[in-house]
Image 1 (cartoon, rainbow, N blue to C red):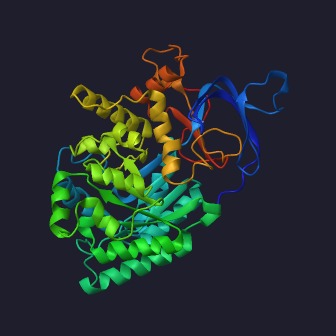
Image 2 (cartoon, one colour):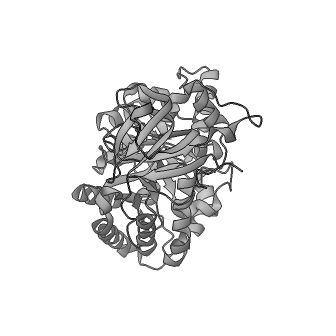
Image 3 (cartoon, rainbow, N blue to C red):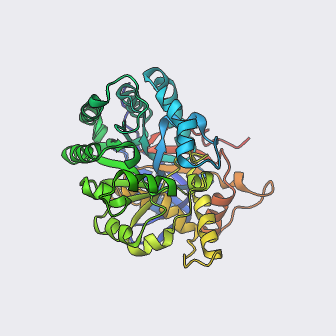
Amino acid sequence: MPVPPAPSPFALRARLLSPLDDGSVLDEVDGLIAVDDAGRLTRVGPWPGAEAPASVIDLRPMVVMPGMVDLHLHLPQLPNAGMGSGLDLMTWLERHIFPLEQGYDRARARVEAPQAFRALAAAGTTTALAYAALWPDSTDEAFAAAEAHGIRAVIGKVMMDRVTYDTRIEANQILERSLSQSDELASRWHGRDGGRLRYAFTPRFAVSCTADMLRESAALAASHGAYWQTHIAEDHGEIAHVAALFPEAADYLEVYDRAGALGARTILAHAIHLSAREVSRIVETDTGVAHCPASNLFLASGMMSLSAYRAAGMRVGLGSDVAAGPELSMFSVMRAGAITQRALAAGGGADAILSPLDWLRAATLDGARVLGLEAQIGSLEAGKEADLIAVDPRLTAPLPGAASPSDAADLMSRLIFRPHPNMVRAAWVRGRLLAGPPGVGAIG
C-alpha cells in the first residue's frame, strides 16, 4: 500500500485553540492557519483581513486544534470495546481479550486495521501508540494500513513468553522467536515515511514475560532507537502476582529497572498504584507514563493521582486503552480523567483539579512530549508539522442553535463533557486529510 501523496498548500480560517510550548494557550476567536506543501505550519495567528491569503477554506464557527495523541490502545481489541465492565484485570483478559487477540491474523488485520485508523481519525486522534497481537504478520499488516491511511502511528508486536496464547510453538523457542520477529519488524518499519511510522518493542507486562524477555527486548529497543512499552501497577491483583514472580525486586518498577528498560523512550501504561520510590525513579529516568482514566474506571482498577505525578515532574499523557477503555475519543478520556480527579479531591485527597485547558494540553502536547515529538507536533505553532483537527462545537450545544461559549475554558469544558460522535469534522497529519471524519460541509 502506498504512502499518501504530499499535500498541497492550504489555509484555514477558524477559531484556533491550542496549548503552546511556553505554557500559555492560543485562543484566536477568528484565526488563520496556513500549511505549506511540506505539511508544515507556516502561519498561525489572528485573521489578517486585507493581508489574508488569496485562497482560504472558511471553517467558522468550527474550532481548529492540535490532533489528539493516544498513548495507549490495543488494535485487536476494538471489537470488544465496552464489554466486561467491573471484571478484575486478569479475568477480563482471559475471558474477553486473549481469545480475541489469538484470532488477529493477517486476514483480520487487513480488514480491521484500516477501519481502526479511520475510527481513530474520526475521534480526532492523529497520533496513536498501539499494541498489536503476538503475530508478526498481522503487525506488519497493521503498519501497512497505517502507512496507507496517513495517521501517525507507533505500533508493536506483543511479546509474551511466560503466559501466552501462542499454542503453536514449543515453550523453549518462544523467547528467541519473539525477539527475532520484533527485530525484523522494527528493521522494516521504525522511522518509515520520515518518522511518521515508528516501532515500539512491546512486552505485554511482567506477569506474562520472563526477566530474559524484558531485558532482551529493552536491549533491542535501544539498538534500534525505538520505543519500549508495557503495563505497570494497573490492578492490585496484578501487583501481587508480579511480586510473587519476581521476589528479588523491591517493587513492580524495579522489575523493569533491572531489565534496563527505563528511559526517555519507554512508556508505562496505567501506573495507578505506585509507591513514592517508584514515582521518584520514573521521574529520575525520564520514563513516560500513559494515564488511562476511562479504562481504570471501566475495570474498577483504581484512580491515578495525576496531579501528584505532574507535580513530581513526571511526563504523563493520556491513553484510551481500548478495549478496556470503552471509547476511542480522547475527549471522553479527558472527561473520565476530570471525574477521577474530582472524586479523589472529594474523598479528601490533595489532588489539584485540572482545568479544561489543562486536559487539552494533556491530550495533545503532553502526549507529544511523552513520545519525544513535542518539537514536531502537539500544538499549533509555526514550524511544526500540521497535525490538526477541525471540531464543530455546534453539535455539543444543549439546545438547537445555542451559541458556542466564547470563553476558551468554557468551550473546552463543553467539548469534554458533551462530546458528540460526529463533532470532529476533519483531521490532518502533515497536512494530509485523513479518511474517517465526516467532512467539513454543512451539518445536516
